Amino acid sequence: MEAKKHTPKFIVLTLVLVVLLLINISLGQVTIPLQAIYKTLIGTTADVKDTWEFIILNFRLPKAITALLVGAGLSISGLMMQTLFRNPLAGPYVLGLSSGSSLGVALVLLGAGFLPPLFSEALVSSGSLVVASCLGSLLVLFLIFIAAKKLKDTMSVLIIGLMFSSFTGALVSVLTYFSTAEQLQRYTFWSLGSIGNLSWSQIMLLSLSVGLGLVLSIRAIKALDALLLGENYAQSLGVNIKKERTIIFLATGILAGSITAFVGPIAFVGLAVPHIAKLYFQTSNHKVLYLATILIGSSIMLFCDVVSQMPGQNFTLPINAITSIVGAPMVIWLLIRKKGF
Image 1 (cartoon, rainbow, N blue to C red):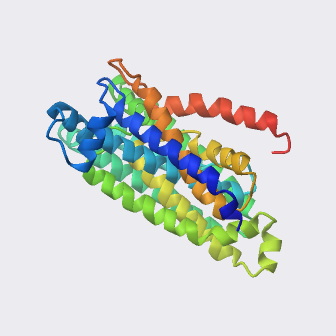
Image 2: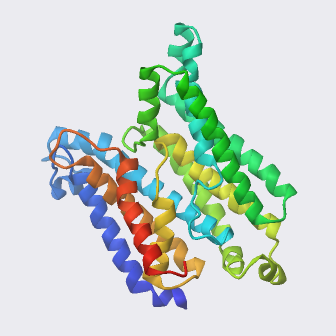
């Protein structure tokens, strides 16, 4: 019943998403007409320039799909973390998953310098970075699971996640101290994030991971609604806190871990989008918020990518910087507007 009440808002968000998707594919160093995009997407490319078709199918479309996946996955992760920890400033990386990914990548990029040149060159590749990032986030997720099994208090798990984040950050700092300027430059580029370097096979893997995480998060919607009133109240309603907490951690780990592995750390999307969805829909019903955060998160990632492309210019700004520039003022405004946050 409540979902039907919000139908007009969902229609508006869907239209905004479609418009931003077309703008995202159209704008860049080369501007492509919308008609050419439409014809390329439906496969009638007889009167479409070969260069436009090549750019759309090999660069713009993969990047736009990556933006949709990243926006949806991080936003849902943020929504689940904020409800589970009952903390409006919790985000998808609060469990230290991003730091685990950073440590994995740092070990490959910065630790390769300790190996003979032949081995270090073979070790450093885009594929090895994805594997290292996945292993780093999975290691942290595994440790979080062990901690969650031994602890009943959810806030204690949050603190342990922050400690993991601090610990892995310190290890990365030690590695950077002993690294060369070239290694530091490579690591810095990775940490700036990029959604434009994925091949179709990598996008397929990312889609499967994000799809699995989203399906698991759907399973947790009912428990998230009950957890809004506290764990004791949720237990009185028959919610198995330990089981539901494990599902939420697993979904967040898959979403945030896989996204960080493929595109690097992306700031503020997971933190800001759930608040925007709550303000726009004026509800705490997770059935409504689930779809709302996916639509808004995907739209914001597409918008940030359009800005980062600097249409008409010959350079691209780092996407992680743009999401921070857009997201930070938004979060500050939300905090000031709602003092009870």
